[in-house]
Amino acid sequence: MNNDDLLFIEDDIETPISLHLSPWKVMIVDDDKEVHAVTKLVLSSFEWDDTPLHFLSAYSAYEAEQLFLEHDDIAVALIDVVMETDDAGLRLIRTIRNELSNKATRIVLRTGQPGQAPERKIIREYDISDYKNKTELSGIKLDTLMCSALRSYQNIVSLNKNKTGLELVVESSSALFDAMTYETLIDETINYLSKLVVQCSQTPAYALSCLGIYCNTSVFHLIESRGDFAHLSELNDIDKLPDNASLLITQCIFEQRHIFAANAFAMNMPSSSNSAIIFYFEGFSALSEQDIALLNLFATNTKTSFDNEELRHELEEGQREIVYLLGEAIERRSKETGNHIRRVAEITRILALELGYSVAESEKIKSASPLHDLGKIGIPDNILHKPGALNAEEWKIMQTHVEIGYELVRYSSQSILQYAALISYQHHEKWDGSGYPNGLKGEEIDLIGRIASLADVFDALAHDRCYKKAWPIEEVIQFIDDQEGLHFAPLVVAAFRKNKAQIISINERYNDDF
Picture 1: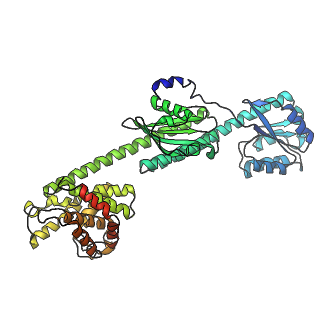
Picture 2: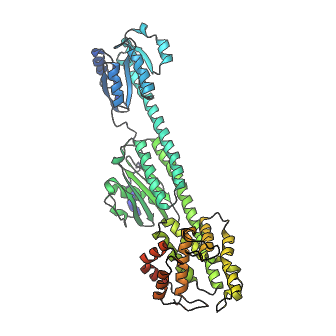
Picture 3: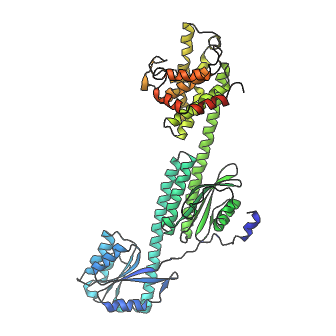
């Protein structure tokens, strides 16, 4: 679809239709059947907001109460005072307001015996819209009464709906703010947007169809689908969408704004690099101006969450890059290649994933691992670069690099540097307690420390160092097996075996000869 096609989008595509789609429910509560018949006859042609009335009949307070339990959308109730008892109507009003917690239905009290329920007393003590003598309810007066009552009911429902909608927007703000990844943020956005559309349009959730589409220039990827779009799994071209969806989404992207139609809308959540998240919904009842205002408010809050997530991602990427460059500088000082930290980083990520860490946490552990030898920055060159074996005194100094690295980053509030402190401090501890600096044993060593230990030793043995030649890969693997339960944690060795082919592939891909 090219830009010229947008000329065919109608100008009023975002003009909402405000109609009450189902008839207004009016309950007549009276023990006189003739009152029911006359009321229905007088109001037979009445309409409000282009919508007719639907009558419910109850001939006692008990019947009325049962109908209120069945129907939560009764707009107006015309209630007689005297039915099975002299105050049955008054008792019914208290039940409706207090026990059923119905504050929306407009109640008009009608009586043929005004002396039994004085108007001044009733108006003050009961939550009713009006109090009429049955002889007053001529055609014109009843018409006027219904207009007033339905307008009031409509306003109350609208206020309640907006209140609930605002509560959803506030609730969503907290949930979206706490989202830790783009995937979670998108899932929560679709979840709360669905709830808000249902609340605003009073449409059953199962009737909605929605798409979350990540678009980057001209490429579209379906994130999640429901309803009519459940069969779509990949989108490389917007023209694969149904016409109505394609039209709104194209306009939404082209004009970089939200587009609202009578029963569909597309929301544009812009991002950097000419990309955005587009949320498309259809299948709901018409939205009012207040509904659209709520959805726009939600979109504004959501955009802030996406902006925050993008900023957080950029900060983390910057932090990872700094950590990597620092790690590479340390390796160069040690006269080792930067590929060492690449290999160790990838191996720690693989083992962390295998051992139950989330994708996000595994990426952080990977990002922290390049600083495992951070403390070597404080080791003298004559020891660091000595081609042969270190004597006892030199070895004691070399061992201090774990504490130097730990002290450099231990007080950081950044999660990656916190992991780096742990890895630096514990990657030379051994499962049997013979490691350093603290001789920790077994599960006294953090799992991240155990993972880093195996990854570092594997890579150190498999590649040349200033003091040794690389071992054949078969001998390295045999050493790992032989040291299970001694140098290395059995759980980590098992994870290594399960992912051995992938780890060997990484070892070859980042070979120092390349």
